[in-house]
Structure formats: structure tokens, C-alpha cells
Image 1 (cartoon, rainbow, N blue to C red):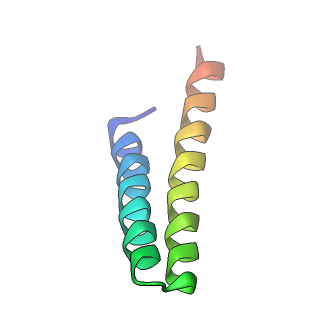
Image 2 (cartoon, rainbow, N blue to C red):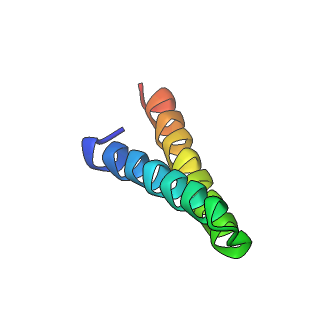
Length: 57
């Protein structure tokens, strides 16, 4: 996994979590689900890059 992709995946997870928790606190369900989707996308990006590294060697 390249360092840039790793940082991008972590950033998506952190931003998604912040958006989700902030929106949940303000009772904004639509925005909370968008934050959860962003967080999930970051986790999937991380898993994809990890799998690429596993099969690369």
C-alpha cells in the first residue's frame, strides 16, 4: 500500500466519523448516513490496498 493511499484511506475514515457523529448529535439523519458512507469507503479503500499488497509479494 503506498503511503499516499494509506493516508487517503485514513483521512476518509476520520472525516466520515467526525461528520457522522456531529450530524447524529444535531439529529441530521441524512448527513449522518453520508458520513457513515464516507467512513465505510475509507475502510474499503484500506482493505483493497491491503489485499493488493498481499497478492503483490
